Length: 271
Figure 1 (tube, rainbow, N blue to C red):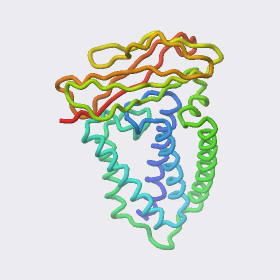
Figure 2 (figure 1 turned 60 degrees about the vertical axis):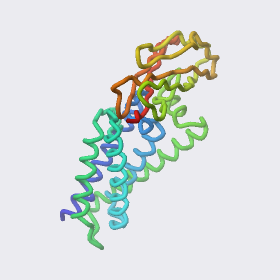
Figure 3 (figure 1 turned 60 degrees about the horizontal axis):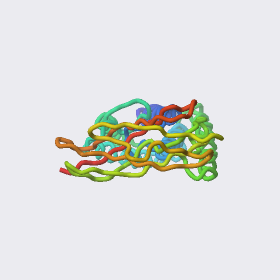
Figure 4 (figure 1 turned 180 degrees about the vertical axis):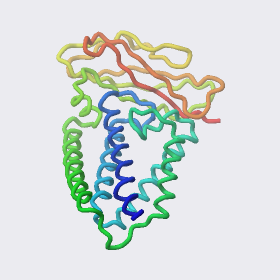
């Protein structure tokens, strides 16, 4: 009984809730505090797998295989959230727009792994028919949506652009720019690409400037209709910085529908 409750009720609810929060997060904001894990493509791929795995568990099909897949999934989740906590990331992106520290996610992942160790599925013990039907329905819908978005990503050449189109954005920029590794006193620099989806030229007027983060030398900058333009950002690693260093960047634009671009840059500070 406890195996059925865990594998066909508790874990599917956890996985589907996590997927829903990720999908909501990428639908309302391009900004991320989770580094590369916050990129729309990664969030969407993870949400799709969580939905499919939740549907598989609900269906009760091949319970032992589903148990091993769930075990591997939460081992991977625990490894990622533990690493992000160790390097000092403020948020792991595990719950989309809901901001949580990696250590909270790591604790949940460990709890699930312990429960999985004690609740292995019994061979030939199918779950309730209602749950099986719900699992098959959810799995079919999730797979269809995943294939549709994958086709959209191929058509627009990136998941970020496809998502920007679906959100109706006028301008698109990567939500997070990873500047790699840095040491105290370093100034790290990278190029950022902005895409203009409108039929009019858009000017980037100016951006964030403070003691640690700056957009440099390239403004004002005009982006042609349907085109792209690059500008540079830099990050100063000040004394006392450690772990994951992340800063928010805001860029003013002349686009009436999107007067401000928001994204984040960051690096991992070496001791």
